[in-house]
Image (cartoon, rainbow, N blue to C red; front, side, top):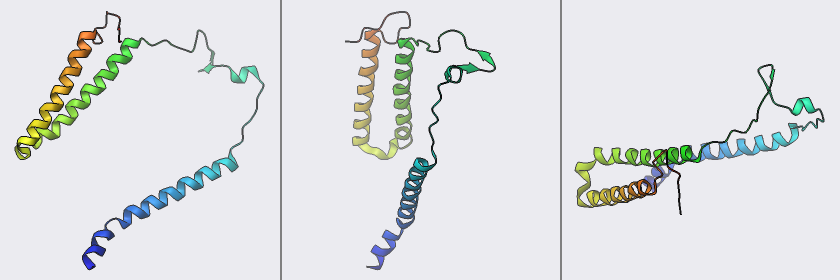
Length: 132
């Protein structure tokens, strides 16, 4: 019984932190309802865009090329793949056959995904993307 008490004592600090942060979050939400005031302004100049003392010119909405977003998302996906490979490389001696088998399944999955994106032309900057 004493060993069970010692093992459960390790989580007491986590529970204290959890309840303290929960209570603090509830208090902050309640205080925001009391102290927040929404000012209604009907002044047109106050709602207009203002940058560094100059009147703004042009449209504030900028169109971003969808190819840039696609390549950025693909970079994040394949960058995370490399990030997941690093711990496997460090502990490769201790994993055994099952560890090698699983990492080869993951590498095959990502390789097929990479070649599929390459086949669609999503990695080409000059070509339009036709994702079906």
